[in-house]
Length: 275
Figure 1 (spheres, rainbow, N blue to C red):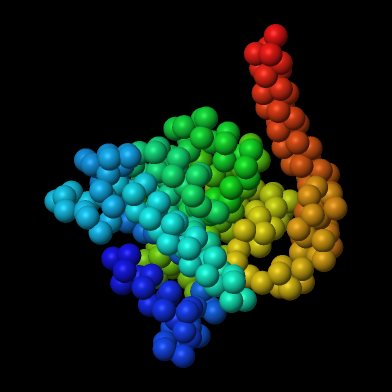
Figure 2: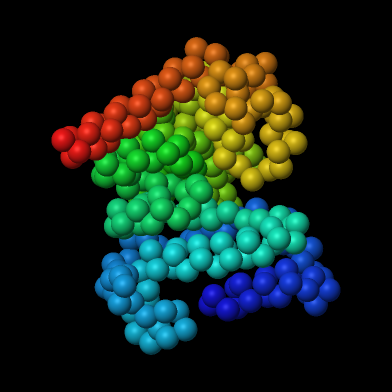
């Protein structure tokens, strides 16, 4: 699978003329997803004794973490190669934590830029806190989850949002789970009504979406302002984002306080060891 997926991409990167259509296609690709049924039990552990993909002979399929790790390794190598040649690079943004073991979220935390769904974070407070501290993007799809794994009114999106996790709303299989020609608007409108989101909340969720998306920098500056990539108030242009400075300041200052708290604990622990 890895050879069929990444082999042509490496070839098109090294010699674009050998695969002109693939080379052109890769300029339009932003990242990789990984979609499967995470609720399927995993019978084979992934550890230092696990076989490499080329030597895998077991009947059971590899674990979620196994797939994500080797996708990450190949994407990382491909990115180094493409960066040296001045080409665009890719990110890994898999379905992660929709169901199954919380270990999936550990793999997502260590190896990915953003994840989709993240429902199982509600059962793993420590991981939830790590995702918050690192502001890892979580694109959630309550309508899809409602049909497959979790009733809409039990979705943790409003809880995650209130705590300051970097969450946004997205579609998932819109031809299956949506009923209008504007599935993303459908996600926002239903979430706003069911979760009682205010205008400020909806604007912040939309801003999060732009920040974690793969559009080019010039588009993000047009949508959010020329300083969108700066931290705190400096990065919020209220005329573009419609997010009040008070909300932006609160999110940034709260995060800084949490990080400072963690750093002080580590510093004090180090001093105690020295003593």
